[in-house]
Image (tube, rainbow, N blue to C red; front, side, top):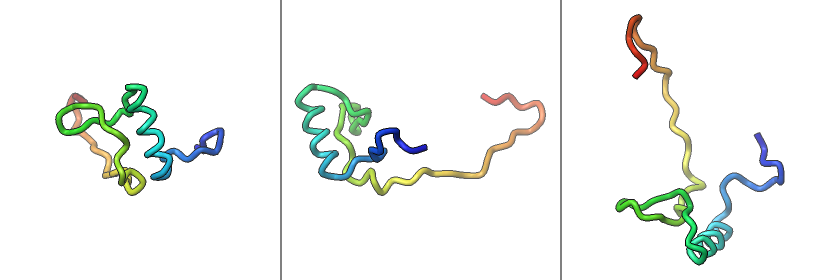
Length: 66
């Protein structure tokens, strides 16, 4: 689905830097956290991230899903 305003889902590096600075200034979290659990800026390589997909898992008859 396309964003209604035409904005890309992942901002370009310059836009990420601008947004990270604004978020830091306003003390707002990005939704990303560092290894210690502290709020972190957008990762520099996020535009290279690709979703991992795999084969669907099918359980045996009688198995509970959780």
